[in-house]
Image (cartoon, rainbow, N blue to C red; front, side, top):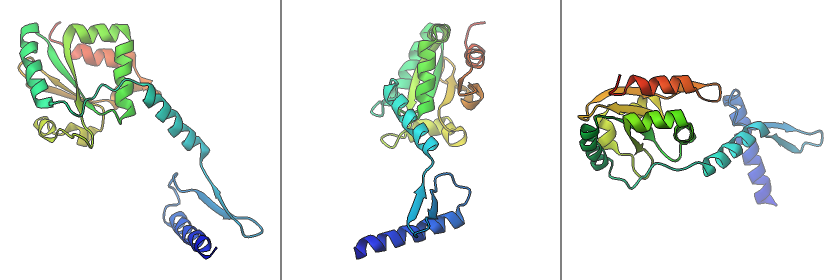
Length: 194
């Protein structure tokens, strides 16, 4: 009983301390006491539900990033193919941990006009960034755009492997998803064909 009482006292102290120092933080539960001095902790159920729904969505989406891939070698091979096919290379950098990375991939793969636009004009590569493989050397070649823009971030290479554009993804969003027009315009802008 003493251990439980000490743990409750410690939790109360830490919780009250967090409430004082982080009053505007959503992740801190609201701590109050009932008339009989019982500790009451209120949780933000909307935030918990949103996290649960995001986890369920993420579990269902395809995982295109391969942490075991040799990205440098893969991109070198894509450059050889790009020269032959007169296509640019579209690198979508991110990871299977990133729900927006997975959503973008799914959006392109399941939207016929986007899929055709990409397939006809690009060699597409998913460059992994995760604790398993940060691909630091590859990212450093392109100025570490994930550090600046977050993920996903897009790196466009010409047929010779020269970086010609870096695109953050949030400008391609609309409401709670991606904008067909914005994504289509982005892909059309960086093709080799007029």
